[in-house]
Length: 413
Ligand SMILES: *Cc1c(COP(=O)(O)O)cnc(C)c1O
Ligand SMILES: [Zn+2]
Image 1 (cartoon, protein in one colour):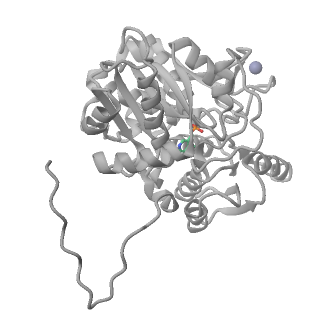
Image 2 (spheres, helix red, strand yellow):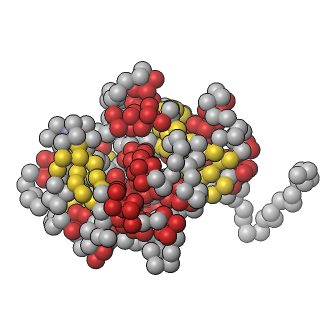
Image 3 (cartoon, helix red, strand yellow):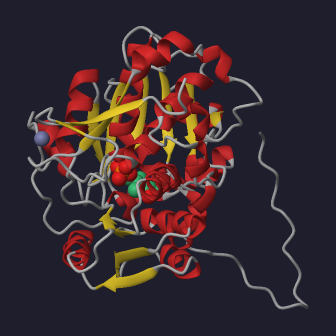
């Protein structure tokens, strides 16, 4: 069997097909292209139980038949993937959900799940002969692509809002990327990148869903969840949604696994979580719409989900409708409170986007949308270490000759 069983690309809207052997952007109709595989071939020759071998390693390339890179030598990896699926008993008790699990993407290289998209996207771009990649970003994607591009020896142009996290800009600088800070939002950065590429033949615009392979890397979160649960599926998966690639990727993975027969039964209900200050998908879902309207003046501390209008909004909404899922908006105040609650209850310092999912679970349980017995998987998309400003340090300052106060009466456990 070949390393990859990629067969062609297909438009997610009009179903037109494209040659996967060429560099491709979006469909002529403007919609994202999806990678399609010869699943019959994969299913006939691969037993999912046999994946669990020392030979395949534990990075996401262990699923190489279902990934786009043709030549194993072309893979650019930093060891990303197979993040822990942690049971959260204490937090689950507080939220009223007995079987709460968190897939912790804070442990991948670059500190966010964006590394999954970068390993697939950069590997395939280089394999297809692209001479440089360029993208607008809210920070984390740019950092991941800058670092993976450095490993690939591929020039990388990044444009991010001046308001993006300092850490992400620092990662781009460290990686030697060509970095521009834009006094505007990610949409403005996108226009600047697209215009710049007219004068740079060989460069590819790798903005969210403008090339087909980032999604393939991100879908491995869905495959890993199934594998980690012994090829069974949870009742619900909760995802912080910005550009939508994460949740669209998980949905795509689950559909592929079902077609392969590696999982059976109903798909998990997918939940898209957004910030109250930028909730175009939530609004569209509440209106029963098939696409979203641009959100005016988006603003949230959860920078990774500050996307006013996603190119793949209709695919996110389709994932929610077709799985019986839902969409939830949470305030910055709530998600910051849950970021601290989770660190206290479980020892997990998550990013604000991940924290938003716990606020969403709280809401959904209160409303009765979630039952106490549902098995719920929350995606923490990154480490809290990338957002040092989200927790104010309030502690007594002591002079060296001062004593640390003795503890008060101990509280009963
Ligand atoms: C990008 C990002 C998201 C949103 O992911 P999408 O795939 O764009 O929906 C969530 N959390 C973090 C930390 C991110 O960097
Ligand atoms: Zn099309």
